[in-house]
Structure formats: structure tokens, C-alpha cells
Length: 245
Image (cartoon, helix red, strand yellow):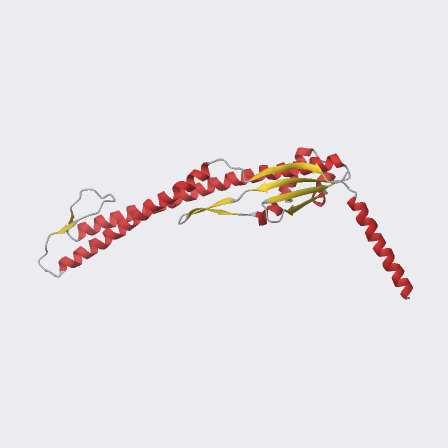
């Protein structure tokens, strides 16, 4: 019985070794991509940089990317269906490079598929980045519009408070300048400070909102310039070459 088990184990090991040897002889081609950090926009801190390597591997081998590559290569439906099994991705440790490796019985086919997948991924990420930049700019615009609306709201409240409490504003302009307040003394001396307090609070709310609006515009300047600049989130560092002949 022991001999039978040992014999079976030997056959199993031999079979695995043969399978590994045969698989290792199948041609493989590898393309290398470089992933560049993606800018993230924050209305409070402006432009930040953040890597996004974690999700890139899934994007490369996603059905959408492989379908685009298959279309470029004019693959048959059967070849397209089996494409996912032929493509693997691997990070280059400590770098922002990604290897795309394709295993195929035909060496030239392996090279073409690896390059097609790399190019499809680069094009897809470029479109995604362009859309993301447009959305980010729209978000910044919306933030400024919302803050400007708030400034106008506080301005109207300031005007209303001044009129309601019989307080004269020394400046004829309700812009961001500092206001000096004057009041017509009412008959009741206790009422004068209360009237002034209400108007002063409304004035401070308006000026704080205006100050925040100006600060937001300054912080957004760099972010807007960077978002409008053409950029390549991913580039092909090295086109596919044959690993095994």
C-alpha cells in the first residue's frame, strides 16, 4: 500500500513538473506602463496628489478594456472570450510601473495583444481623467456660486437690519469694505446698543462670508490651472517584447 501511495505521488509530481515545463515554453510578451498620480481637488486645501495604483490592475483586465483591445485586433468572438485568461498584470515593487503580460502559443500574437491591451488601457484612462477634470471644475464652480449666493444673502440681511433698526451706514457701497455704523439715538437709551448690536452682527456675518469667498478663489487658482492642463494619467514605458521564444 505504501509503495502504491509513493508511486502515485511520484506520478503526480512528475505530471506537475511536465505541465509546468510545457506551460513555461508557451511564449509570453510583456508591456510596461507607468501610472502617474491623480490630482484630487479639495475646496479647503486646494490641490492634493494621490496615487491610485490599487484600482488600476482591475481596470486593465476589465471587460471594457479588453473589449477595446479585441476590437483593435479584430479578434474572433472565441478569441475575445478567452482573452482574460491570457492577460495578467503585475506591479513592479517600489515603483509606479505595471507589467502587462500576455501568454499565447503564437509569439507574434502575444506581442500584438500585449500592446493592444496597453494602448486600450491608456486611452480609457485618458478619457476617464478628462471626464474627472471636467467634473472637478464644475464642482469648484458650484462651490463658488453657492458661497456667492450666501454672501448676497448676508448682504441683504445686513441691509434689512440697518433699515429696520434705523441705523445709517456711512458708506453708500455695500461691497467688501469695512463699514462704519452711525445711529439716530432713540428716546430709550437702552434700545440704542441693542439696535447697533443687531446690525453689527449682520455686518460681521456678511463680511465673514465675503472673506471666505475670496479665500476660496485664491485656493482654487492653482487647482484650476492644473485641471485645465492636458495630462497623461498613464503612459507606455516600454512596448511589448517577447520573454520566451
